Amino acid sequence: MPTPKQHRWRIAAGEYERHEARRGQRHAYSRLRAERSALVVIDMVPFFVDEHTYALGVVDTVNRLASGLRIAGGRVVWVVPAADIEVNEEFLGSDVAAAYRASGGVGRCRDRLWPALGVDDGDLFAEKSAPSAFFPGRSDLDERLRALGIDTVLIAGTVANVCCESSARDASTLGYRVVMVADANAANSDDELNATLHTVYRSFGDVRSTDEVLDAIASDRPRCADPSEAGLGQRTTSTGHGAWSTT
Image: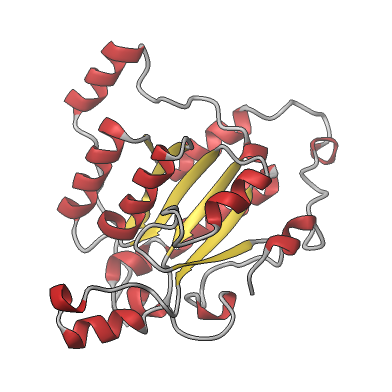
């Protein structure tokens, strides 16, 4: 197995300046309410992670982000390709098309994920039959998140400039507050990742690091002398999340 590798991500200074001049602040969503937020982790399955250095490099970051959001009261969604995922054989060629059709694996969604991911029994699981997890008719994720009162989605996973960007764009079109978590997304190169981050930050949502996301969530929580008073010690795997899980 190759050594995991971290991306060198960046947003150009000029893009930060553009938004600061337009809206008076660098980041669109300075307030992140955990209970209205969902981390949507895209396609972290063996087909896309095994032998891919950058995808391997975000596993620990995704786990840390998921754990922090759960503790704060947010939701974690693991999205995998469906068995009936639509592929354009004329465009891809027969061999590549066949590989993509099988990319999601078989069995329960949680069993199809990369094994080092820290999945919790209270997490949600979803399938998508298109690149985007939010394209109408290709996934039920939008309806399920709305039923839970979610208005903010944190996008992570792989491949950043294909399924992750597609999901971010469609989530924005549907009215969600979108945050692309820069160091929790993996592409095939820094250039490809940074092109996606530029596009999302410019037109579809915010781009933040994992540390920034967790800090924003923590700063929105009430101050309590005892963490258990804020519910930090009360979250268990017997929450109601499992009723929404697709196993």
